[in-house]
Structures are given as structure tokens and as C-alpha cells.
Image (cartoon, rainbow, N blue to C red; front, side):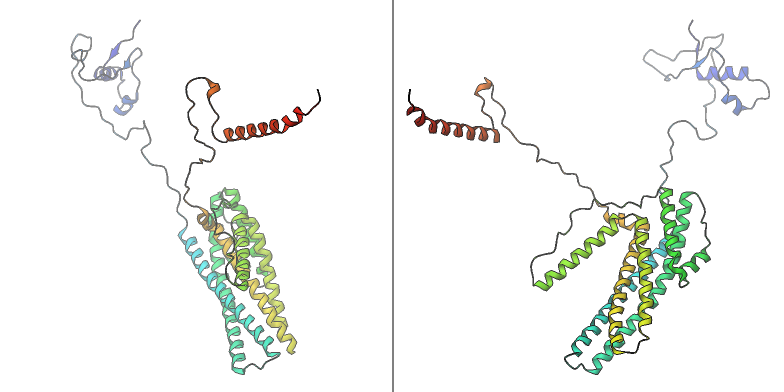
Length: 393
């Protein structure tokens, strides 16, 4: 038995007829149709004529235009996808300050190492030639000023890196869904108090790396599919220039391997060991200065040069760790992808002519190979004919 079909106005009237007294209008709109009725959507006019009229004793009067009292809940969601949360401005500002102080510290340690190397060169020359007293005084003063300036910037770098580390840890633990387990003051004391700062900085960085790994932040494995580099050292120029270029290429290769190939936890452990070694070397150099002998003073120049080189390495690795946490290493490696079709496996061959397959000659390298084999076979037959003619029957 077919179901009766009603229009929207008639159904609304039926809903009103079946609505019990006291039921609000909004609740009536949500009520279902009476059993045996269904909604049918039809255009106001059609090719068959006027729209069908409701069967009944009297024609239905047109009701009010339906409207929504609130936004409809059906259909596609109009809101766009939520954007990625912006990085913390305070953490980003602290990272920028740490980078600036680390760069200044690196420049000062490089200049201090050059000054110590110049002092050592003056001592070597003084073994066979007299060196002017003013030159020695300027060299000593330059090395002393650069050394103390580098130590001042080491303290400044420690302060800015502590400020950055506190904010980076807070963000990492928030991404994990937990809170920072350590207080900021205790972390600052562990980072800045001597002797204590040999242990706690590595602990704090290790906790940061593990928290980021648990939170799913993809910075433990950097990209290693870098594009083509500049190649090896150039072969032109004098031998000394070539040696310097080769050494620089080796250092750059090791630096890129450490920056792009190691995980964050591995970088932290390497930095920790280097940090402890730098502090031990600095204490040994400071104790060496108490020896007033001439040989001890000459040895102290060499030890100071070694300490400066270790400090340069520590600053570079610190900058690598900071950039890895901030994601700058991945941004440096990321580049626009360009897809190029590989045509090396394709070879254009002429279309085979219609007819017998026996008349078709092989094309390309196969034809050359068969032609060469045929010539080789003819040569063998030619060489074999005299032997066959002279053989006894």
C-alpha cells in the first residue's frame, strides 16, 4: 500500500494538530512527522503543470515561510582547518638573544686564538732574532684583552642560554601534556653556579630532548637528503692554499654531518662531554699561570691556544643544539622540490614496417651486435676454408 505524500505546509498543519497543548514551538519543530507520512521536495512549477494540491475537503492555505532560529547543524563544516600554533614569542626572543651572544662569543674566541698563535710565533722568532719590546707588549695586551672579553661573553651566553632553555623546556612539556617538573630558579642555579653547572646543563638538555621525543616533535632525526654541494676542494693555487682548502672542506664536512646527521639526544651528549672538557682545560690553564718559570709561561701560551680552540668547538656545538631545538637545521635543509622526468631508460626506436617479420631488421645496439657477430662468424669460416681444402680425403 503506497504511503501518502504531503507538502511542507500540510505536514506543518498536521504537526500542529497532533501537538499536545503546552509544547513550545521549538520543540514542535524538532518533533517527527506522524506515522505514515514523509517529506517530499518538489519544485514550485514543473513541465506537467501546477504543483499537486493536497487531497482534502478544502485547499490548504499557504503558511509562513520557514526560517531557522539558529545556524543549521547539517552540511559541511564552514570553518577552515585550524592553523598551526605560533611559536612562543618569549621563547623565540630568548633564542634570538642566545644566538647573538653565542656569535659574539665565537668571534672573540677566534680572535683570542689568533692572538695566542701570534704570541707563540713571536716566541719562536725570539729564539734566533730579537723582537721589539713594543711588539711583544702589544701582542700580550691584545691576547689579554680578548681573553677577558671572551670570558665576559661566556657569562652573557650562559645567562641568555639559561633563559632560552627554561622557555624551551616549558613548551616541550606543554606539548607533551604535562607541566615543567623543575622550578625556574633551581634551573638557573644549576646552569650558572660554578662546579654545579658541569652536571645540570646536560641533565636539563637531556630531559628536554626526551620530552620532545615523547611529545612527537620531529626534531630527533634531521634530514640527510641534502642537495648537491659545492664539491671537494679546488685543485688550483699554491700548495699552502690547497692544504688550507682541504682542511676547511674536512671541517665543513664534519660540521654538516654533526649538524644534520645526529639526533638531538646524541648532540646533547656530545655537547655535555665537550662542556666538561672545556671547563677542565680552563682550570688547568689557570693553574699553569702560577708557575713563574720561562718555560711554564711558554707552555701556557700553547695551553691557552688549545683552550680557545676547545671553547670555539663548544660554542659551535651549543649553537647547533639551539638551532636543532628551534628547527632551523630542518629549515636550512628544506628546499623546493623539483621533479624531473628520468629519460635515461627510454630509447626511441623506429616503428616496424608492415609485412613479414623476417624482413624486419633489429634497430639500435641489437643490430650492431648482430652485425658484429655475423662478421666474426664469416671471419671464422674464411679462416677455416684453407684448412678444410688441404685436408686428406
